Structures are given as structure tokens and as C-alpha cells.
Amino acid sequence: MRLLSVIGMLLVAVSVCAATRVDSLREAIYSQSPFNRPVVIAHRGDWRSGTENSLRAIRSCIDMGVDIVELDIAMTRDSVLVLMHDDTIDRTTTGSGRVSDYTLAQLKEFNLLSPIGVVTRQKIPTFKEALALCRGRLLVQVDKWPSLKDILLKEASEAGCLDHIILRSSWSSSKINRDIGALPEDVIYIPVLVCKGDGDDERLDDFLENFDTPVISFSFRHTDYPVLRRIKETRDKGYHVWLNSLWDTFNGGHDDERAYENPSEAYGWLIDMGADMIFTDHPSLLINYLKSNLQ
Image 1 (spheres, rainbow, N blue to C red):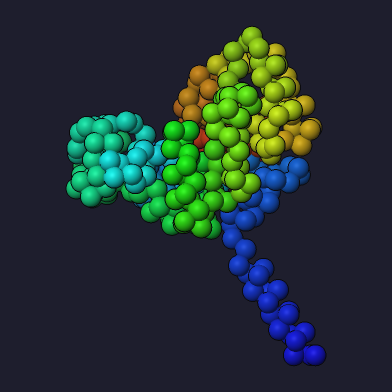
Image 2 (spheres, helix red, strand yellow):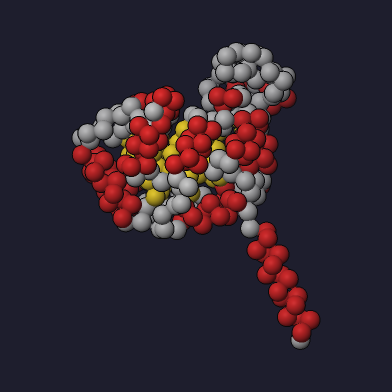
């Protein structure tokens, strides 16, 4: 009996040790409790110091303590998902043409380019290669997903990473139900309110009433949209709020570029607006600000 008790304790200990950073992030996101600090989401990985949608950009995010990495997907001619933002490979690789015109083996012959166009030794990653690197370490927000939903979910499931996946769109609940259908329970879906001035309240009400989600995202060109006053209401109802610092049309000018000169007018302003999660092109800049100001 005593031996069985000891074995039980060991099994519990192993279970606790097996919990990953992703498990902790999911638990925090699904909790209605405030975060200790905003969650950091890196756009296309840490591409400013590497190459967008590359394994190196993902590794950099892991090393600096990013919470979520956003990646873009496209499908090859032989039906393999790779990381690529554009329909073509012209801008980011040594090749040219559409991703869908190449097999994976052919795409692997090209090299990725740095942000200033310098040829690197890096290759176009597959989605599964990226998931293997992220597994247990980073949640993954996948962009360019609606037309690739089925293969995306299949590959994520095969990689044991279905619970790592975050999907976002600005579509209404009726459009999601009609064109996408039900998503697996493990997948986090986040509706995005792209503020326009007219109809914003109705769209937010649709999100609040019809999506079973822990997070709602707001994007706004101007800061005087009346619906932005409802960010507090959204948080009071138990949702976390995702705001962007990518460029000025997403945040009324309180963006990453402003953060270089006055981070309190960028990241500090977004936090004051109610940001629980910040989507950035400069993850190291944001992380350093959070460490200095939110200890």
C-alpha cells in the first residue's frame, strides 16, 4: 500500500514536470484573471534581426522570451505547408514565382533573404518544422489560414501542436459559421474588430454574443472611435484584449516606430488603453520596456 502511495506521488510529480510553457500560457489566456504583464506576440518572428518566417526568427523569439509567434503559411504544388507571407517567393528568397508552382524539394533549393536583401544560408521552413521548434515553447498564431484550414489543422494535429494554434479574423459569426464551420476545441479563435466608426458596436456585440473565445482584438486607425470606450467593458466581462503596435494604422499612431523615441507613448499608451496582449514588429524593444516598467 505504501509502495502504491509513493508511485502515485511520483506520477503526480512527473505530470507536473511535464507541463510546458505553452500549457501555462493557455491557462493564463483562458483565465479571467489579469496578466502580470502583457503577452508579447512577435509578427513573422523576430524578423527585424533575422529573416521573416524563418526558423532563426522563431529561435530568437524563444531566446528572448516571446509568448506567441505569428507565422504565415502557403501551400506547395505537392500540398505541403511552408512559411511564406506572399503568394510569390520573389521578395524574400533567391527564387521567383508562386509558391504553389513549386514542390517542397524545389523550394528548398532557394535561400531566404535578409530584411535588406542579403542572401542568407537559411531555407524556407515547412510549417511542421516551425511547429517542432515551437512545441512546448511558443503559441503560434497562423495567418493566411482560411483557405488552408483543413491541411493546417491536420499538420498541427500530426505534430502534436493543435493546442498551440491561434487563428484570427475580422469575419462576423455568421460568415465564420457559413465559410469555416466549427474549429477544434483546442484551437484558440480570436475575432478582430477593425474599427470603422460605423457599425463598430454591432460588430463587437456579435463577437461578445456569438464567439466562445477568451480574447478579442481591436484595430483602429483613429483613437476617437466611440467603440474604443468599450475596451474596459470587454475586459470587465472577462475577455483579454489584443492590441497591435505594428504600424500606425492599427493603433492611431501609437506604434513600434514611436516606441523608439517615446515608448510610453506607444507601449505605455496601449497598456493604458487596456492591452493584455501586444502584437509587435519589435519584440525585444517591447520586452525591454515591460521589464523596465512593469516589474
